[in-house]
Image 1 (cartoon, rainbow, N blue to C red):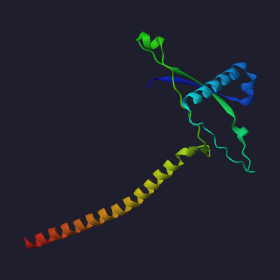
Image 2: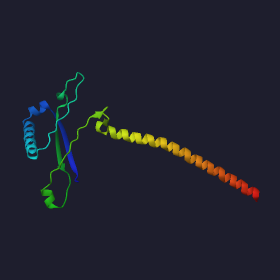
Image 3: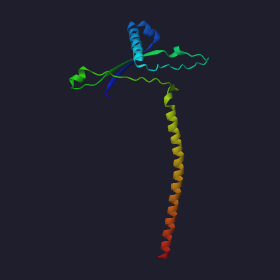
Image 4: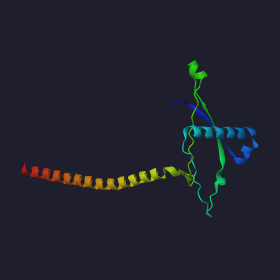
Length: 153
């Protein structure tokens, strides 16, 4: 793990086609992706399109291109490490947000945590009642034993 600095920028489809450097970069990426898929025979990712309110898939509503600049951000006295910096790998995970607050992929985890917390809260109430009952019985027994030993003496 190495310290890394990131710079992110998004582009619309029209911005990409208006800038020759971006269209060249996109073309190079597409060719490299095709070559990599041919060599590894990997399964191709096919995005699922959600249906809009009228029942038609609307793939153009969220077409954005993300450009990520990632660079190793550290200094070392090792000359070899400074002259041959390894590439920085980046994973981009795109996830929808519910109400612009919570990632959709974390909903099952949040539901599980809430369920465990609710069960723990209910069980804590029962355990507290049992312990309180045991403590009050023990205190009453100690009081009776103390008063009976005083009567004997």
